[in-house]
Image (cartoon, rainbow, N blue to C red; front, top):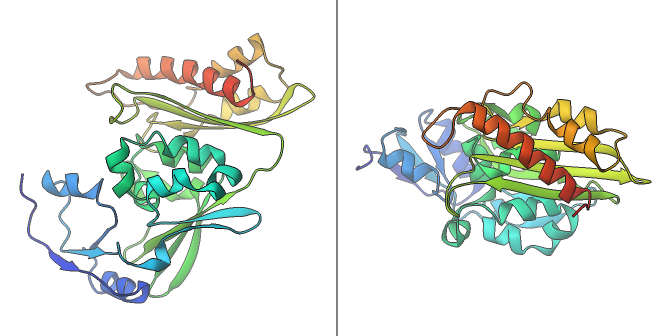
Length: 284
């Protein structure tokens, strides 16, 4: 289909971009366009103006800031995957980003765009949620930080307010003793996850002392598998881990669509969580 008519703006600075959004409440930000353009073609989005931030250098790059890694919103998935800073400081981000769609999309799609799109079937929201990331937004009135736990509000709905631009994401470095894994079940390499699990596991003296688990496509927004996280504390690898992971689908509301029914997604969540936890804990 052909998109509905819209105006186009290409600001020369972040300040100009914020002003353009502030002057038009129906404007939308255009980043890599890999999520937005299909919505426009299907007429599921009707922006009056597209504000193209693709050439703003302030929104690009990966930076080591001591206790966290800062990823600019316009950094492409491919740049994130190839970043030594990301691989060293937050390897779970690198693992999951390498599984986003295909190479062509990873070269155009942006890290911030994927998060701002707030699709619960996207790989990155659950990862940033599990790691306790903080999203940084800018408007004509200033800057604010939004914890990932409060950023994803509903299906395709984030906490970004009209006039705000996502400028970057702070990913905490968890430090020594942690292992990471992202497990994803999908039909083809390019398709959305039917279910995905992001796992970060810390062990000491053979036992799990902390686990962080994010679930992809198990509700209207990315979720933490809190029951399993609690059940894993103090557990050594073995049958107890499997039993703890049986709680992974607790308090979830997985969707029903052409790809899977809710009960099948709950089954996948339990199986994939077990796999992800074992891999993150270093068990074959």
